[in-house]
Amino acid sequence: MHRLRSRIFPALAAHGGGDWLLTLTAAGLRADLLAGLLGALLVLPQGVAFARLAGLPPEYGIYTAIVPCIVAALFGSSRHVMSGPTNANSLALFAMLSPLAMPGSPDYLRLVLTATFMVGVMQFLIARFRLGSLANFISPSVLLGFMSGAACLIGYRAALELWELARSGGVLAAGEPLVALVTVATTLVVVRYRRRWPAMLLGLAAGYALAEGWQMQTGERIERLGALTSAVPPLSMPDLSPATLAQLSGIALSLTIVALGQSISIAKALAERSGQHIDVNREFFGQGLSNIAGSFFSSYLSCGSLNRSLPNLEVGARTPLAAVFSSLLLLLLVLAGADLLAGIPMSAIAALLLYVAWSLINVPKIVEIARFSRQEAVCLGATWGAMLLIPIEFAILIGVGLSLIFYLHHTSRPVMRVLVPHGPERRFTPVEDIPGEAAECPQLKLVRMEGDVYFGAAQYVGDVLKAFRERHPGQKHLLVMAKSMNFVDLAGEQLWAREFRTRAEVGGGLYFHRPRPRVLDAWRRSGLHDSLRGGGHIFASKAEALARIVPALDPQVCAHCRVRIFRECRAMPGPSGEEGNRGG
Image 1 (tube, one colour):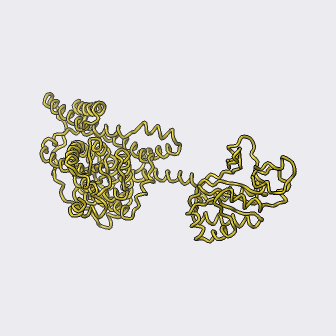
Image 2: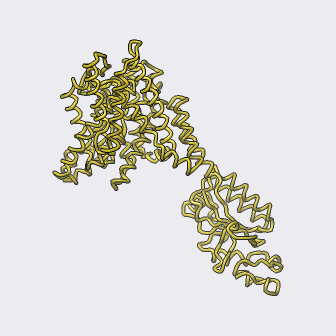
């Protein structure tokens, strides 16, 4: 089977794909075929509705669910993700491109195809340079804020379209809002009582039936979708002129962020349920190829669709062939039912968009984030508000930027806990965790470093170290517990080198307990490691550190010290009596 995979799908084998071919069985093919049929039925109303949301002819939603879906499934990492048109991508595309050209016009279609191609290239490059970890910088709160803002915009557009349909000809008509109401009500009932059934398709069917009956009984005209120009995706060509590429570069970057955030979130969510390992870079590779290919087959921006991927998993799909079957069956359905599709009521499509808008607002998750963290809530709210007030391409960047700012603020102030031995076992304990006033050694300060020392944190750590010296000038020696300091950059190395020199100049010393290998490597490159190791300033255990440092303390200070918090203090000359021998 491995040889067969390499011969039939050499490109898949070359990029690590096609491993699912080894698991193919007759039962698995039947399961994939049934899942593909459900996927085709689900995407039929969604594709039409989402294309309208993107300002495109309805057939573009169908096209986007065919070629891109097949390519993404065959070259991606997930076995269950189905790609195609999505509400968020559709809305983002419309919001970013409609100021540049009239929606639905030839110029608009040209920009859509070009933007889709550019997003595909960016996704492809991210995969080839293995930068998939960049998706981790899009926090869940930012994605939720983006989805919530998108829901508000989708709902507004759908409600506006329904109003225009209801007052067509200047007279309010009852038929259009009634069809919309029945469509939404049917969809909600199916979702509530039959979750495995294609709710949107059944809602559309109910609205369709009512529109037919209403028009026959009352003679009132119900606005229809109209005939699709073609069921088979025609060839197309994006505009690759330098002027257009420059015009769309910023928009394509923002769309890439939106699409990748959705795709990876969906892939990871499905992987948690299925137990499959997801290769993020390979997922980007598949998504990139799907958008590049789609731009030459009259398709607009696609990515993983939760509305189709989750049912695909739940219904029992086993391999990416379910997505392939879904695309082929969708093509057959459109070819066989072109006349039926032409009669779909526009008010039913608008109603489905209202349902989509409502389903996008995840109230329990919003409440959870608001309770968990004020900073996460700010990121969510800022992204949500930005979606409503400024261009979408900047809204998602504002959310990502805020997340990074909060993260940098947090990491730029690493916790530095002062420790003393405490309790019967003399464990090193933070002084704030000890009831009452904890006594420190007058010559040696113990500090646990909890965080990395990089350029953003160097100033703060330096200020804290300076404050230690100024408040307790007698503590000329400093022992840093460095197990939790995983990284130092050049600024961090220079900070510790400066601290080492400063303490040496006053007759003290800087010591480290168990610094991490990455930290030691950085010190070796800078030369600081030679000074630390050569002078015996790096220790593998606390006992070894104290056995080396305590005898090096000033014996005259020890002779008058009544604190004596270390066991090693027993060997030091000191005042007679019980108080002078507390160390132990």
